[in-house]
Length: 114
Image 1 (cartoon, rainbow, N blue to C red):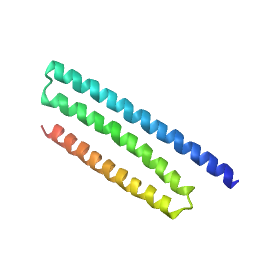
Image 2: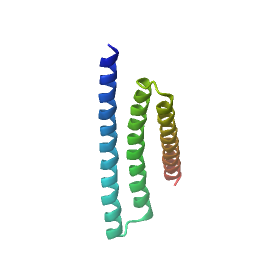
Image 3: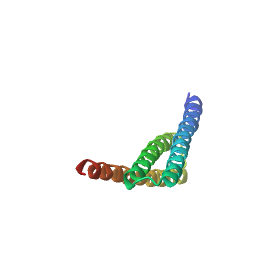
Image 4: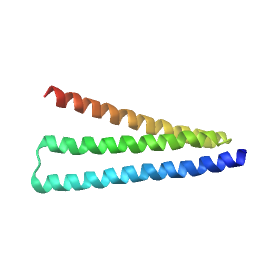
């Protein structure tokens, strides 16, 4: 039974990381084209902020998926060194996610008060 759970969890981690990859790549491509279009058309500051805010939302989603995969990874690991490494990565991703969320909320407050 334990081997089956490890197999299922390992595959789930790969799938979730693949989803995170797709989300981050899609957001990056969208942001790249948005920035390129903004440069060509000399977009205003508000449009530039919208592009970066949307990109930040993609990154938050991708980081959240990666954090889920990290949590699953800790459930099948017995080695403390590996758990420590996963925990360090999880903490970094959590802080990135927190600050991106904070910046998005701040941007939304400024937008609604303007």
